[in-house]
Length: 193
Image (cartoon, rainbow, N blue to C red; front, side):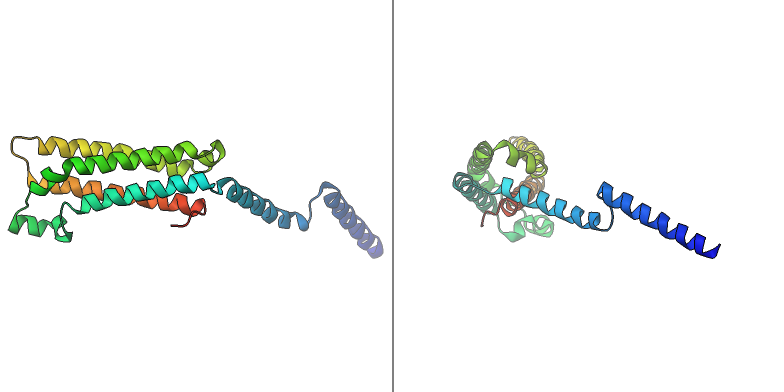
């Protein structure tokens, strides 16, 4: 009787193993999942590989971002954003009025360069980069709003210097976020900085 139970258990175990092997399951199926992920990653890397035209468009885009950052920074030094300095020393709006058009021009060039970069991407690349590109779209909306608010403040009968400095600070932060998203895209596309 005991031999029958052992024999039945072995037969049942062998049958289950045979059924798993026929379906492609078993121990080796877990190793295949890693291969599928590796294949997907290599496919994504291949899709995102930048062409010379894309690298050139990206370089133009990066240069435009840096020009916008430099123009924004030229409106004041590091202590420019410090509210203590504003409260105790005042804030001079003359550089803002002098360079406002230049700032808007460099921001327009920055967005135009970005648009040119988007135009050289193929559909698969745009699909793979949709998260980064979506963030850039939202940052573009933020930037447009911030520029509009800055213009409203500067065109007021009596501009509030602290609000102007706050608007410029917001624009600077948005440009920095814009640059950060472009750097992420460069990394994804293996474009050297």
